[in-house]
Image (cartoon, rainbow, N blue to C red):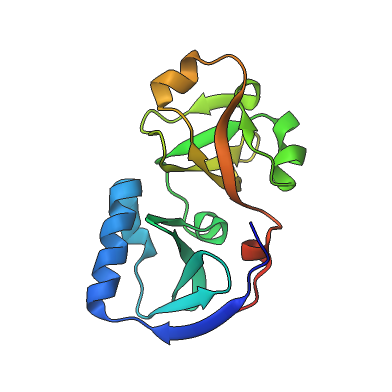
Length: 165
């Protein structure tokens, strides 16, 4: 991800809120209800990412057509859908933004779809490490033995994580 910083910040209309939450519901189902709040603001950035603040917390991001919780959102408001669990050996690599390789995965949520976002969590404490795009459906990923299976788009310590709003 290129260096990003906030450009504009403004409250969004109800119609835009409806579209964002419909897209989020499409990705994570009924867990999207946890991401509603009294005030919703949109923060345009210098990068490709738009961040949505729910009650002043950066919990939703939009990258192109993808609407998904940010890592901060996943930490504050956990959800069980679209999760990939990695072993302890993968944590150091994930913290540097590495893509996920099949040998490091210990559990795959059955609702993972190719070209859709997934939350990557660590095995021991269940904490979110990154958000990525699945390169395979869950069934295909289970059959893989080697190679890259998830392209990381947001990780702990990246510009989006560190962005001051």
